[in-house]
Structures are given as C-alpha cells and as structure tokens.
Image (cartoon, rainbow, N blue to C red; front, side, top):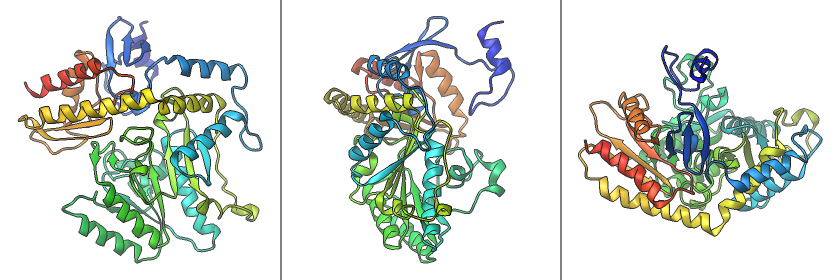
Length: 422
C-alpha cells in the first residue's frame, strides 16, 4: 500500500473536506524555503507552512539546539519544577517585547495561549471580588479553535455547529478612516455597561479574515478607551509576532501596550509546538499571595517543554541578528514594489502589504470571503507551478520564511502575476 493510500485510510487532515479521492502531497524532506515531494518535485514554501517557519526548513542552528537539548533533558513536569531553557526564553521574550516587569505562562499552541489569556483576564477580576464577564472583539476575528478562542472569533461556518455553546461576545467592525467614529461610539456603549473584562484583537492584521489591515492609531485609541474603563487589552500576536509586520511585535507600533500577549506560530521558528502568554505585572498581582482557591488552576502536560523552549530561544537569537533584520527589510521592500506593479491590474480588487505580509484580493463575481470558490483553483494553479500558497478564498497572500532570496521571492511574484494577468 502506498503512502498516499495509507494517508487516505488513516489520517484526518485539518480544514480539509472529507471527500473520497482527495490526495495529500507527501513531503519527504525540506531545506530553506524548499519542500521536496517523494517524487522529487520542489515547491517553494511561500506561506511559512501556516505562518510558523521563520528561518527556513532544516536550519543548522535550530537542528543543533534541538539535538543538544534532547541529550540533556527532553521533558519534565512544570508544576513545582523548572529548567534553564524555559527560564531563559521567558526572560528573553519579556525583555524583547518591552515588558520588563511581568510573567510568562507557557502552553502548547496559539489557541491555548488565547485560552490562557482569556481565563487570566476573567479571573483577575474574580480574584478582586469585582467580577467582569464581558469580552469585546473585532468582526472577522480568528483566535483559534478551542471553545474560548472560538467564542471571541467571528461567528461563521468555522464554528457554526457550536454557536449555542459559545459565550456571548460583543463585536466591533474593524476600524477604518471612514467608520472610526462609529466604531468608537460602539466601543463606548459597551464600556458604559461597566462589565467589560477585556478587549482582544489581532494587532494591525487580521490573518484568517484575509490579511485585513488597519491603522495603529485606531487601535491605540480603542485600547486607551478600554484602559480608561478599567478593562484589559489582549493582543493576539500569534501570527503578527516575530517580525511579520515589520517590527518585532506589532504591538510595538503603538504607544499603548497590552496587558496580555498571546504568542505561538513563529515562536519556535516552526520546529516545535509551543505557546506563551505574556502577562503584565499589573494583572499578575491579582494572583500573587492570594488564598489557594484563587490560584490559576490551568496547565498542560507539555507546558514549557525543554526541547521547544531551547529551539525557541535559538530562533529568537537568529531573528535579532542583523542579517535576518536586513532580510525582513528586503522582503518588505520587494512587497511594496510588487504592490505598485500589480495594483492597477483588472483582476486586482485591492492589494495591501505590511512588513513581510502581502495580500492580493482578486476581483470575481463573489464577495471576498474565505469561502469564495476561486480558492481551490488558485491553490491548485500555484501548486502546479511549484509554489505553496494557501489562498484565503479570493485573497492570495505571501508570508515567506525570512531566508527567502530575492530571486526566489520574485519567482513567487511572477507566478502570482501570471495567474491574475490571464
């Protein structure tokens, strides 16, 4: 029996309709930005394997960090025990975010990092004996697939089977120059109820909604309103963190800082599952020196896995190197040039870019949506051309590993332009 047949027999893939005859692409190896199939075909990974891979596949320094840590300590319970990789990584994350007094709570992935943030926010008010239960989020939001993260996400087909089980959340339109006054008025109306615990948002870019982008000054104003009303701000930087928006974290483009920050995806450079929730001291103090029953009773079996933490620390070191920062600047510049090159093409409804993220919204007879039917044609076309792009409906986006060369990125752009110029 072939691997493809075994895959069909035994595996249930994520976000994949379970139709007969579906065949996965079997990847045998990878190096840099290139994926190699079992037939020997080469594919450019232009979306960093779902936004996680920062430095390229099979990176020598990350391989070394993983191997060396595996020879010392592969895992240990993190309740009552600690280890150097987690301690060093936590210190590094807090300092590089600019959160010089705070704590890091480790988990397993982006969804759990969001769950942790939501629970900490709600319990911080519970621990003060001043419970607040209301959460505010943006329309179009995507924060994960666990129940809490689904609840603060946009209500759509992704979570339709669970609508009746999701707790109530107030949603605001994504702000723009034309609707900002109305968004502020809606925010003020919610805050006037004096029951808002937290406002959660994807800073500056909504990923799954089609790489929708909005201005730092708009988000900054909304955050100030929440803080003035005594609420907390939760930045979901699972996708936007680690250089994707041009700064190390998207939140660093605002003067107002969040109270909690959710990290995952690029955290380990794409090597290992790991989530982290950064917590300001002003929130942590509501859990400090409290009665036992006000403990934050949350944890995961693989919390702060030493292998993942060791790789994450090395990945962050690589990210801060001048050569990586120069690559980020180059990719940002190439994105801007390509935007100018294609923005007047007939098939282009809108094109936008921020940092290493480029999104092209294509014109067709359907509304822009993840469920736009052009998605499958786009995906197959690009794959046949040797480029992995996973369009969000009719939105084609690129978010490559930072090691991609100028020629490799231009090859991706050429394939995209060839499709929209047909």
